Length: 142
Image (cartoon, rainbow, N blue to C red):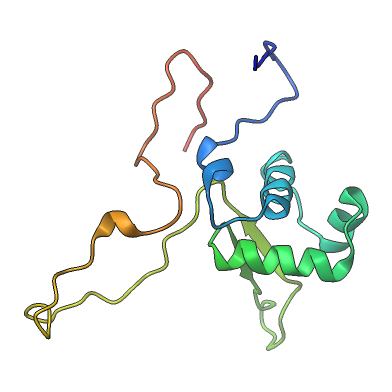
C-alpha cells in the first residue's frame, strides 16, 4: 500500500496521531472530534448544527458527545449570567489531547494485602509527550 500526501499551504488542520490511535474512541467519535478540531479557535459548538452538517441524528450525536466527554476530549461548561442566578447556554471546550482528571493523591504507607503495585504500562489510551517538537513544521503559540 502506498500513502500519497500533498503539500498544503492553506485550509488544513494538524491533528495528533494519538487521536486516531486511541483505542477508547469509536470511529464515529474520532470523526466528530476531528471535524470539531478543524474549525477556528473561537467557533461556537452547537449540536444541532453539527448534526445537520455531518448528517447524524440527535441521539447518536448525544451518544458520541457523551463518549468524548467521558474520555476527556470535550468538557461541558455552563456559566452563570452576571448578577443573576440563572445559567447561560452550555459551552463545549474541545481539546486535541484529553485532560487527565484530577485524582486524589494516595498517601497510604504502601500496598495492602501483599499485592504488588499495579503496572502503569497496563493502562489503556494514547501516550502523549509533554511538549511535542515538530521540526520544520508550523507551530501554535501557547
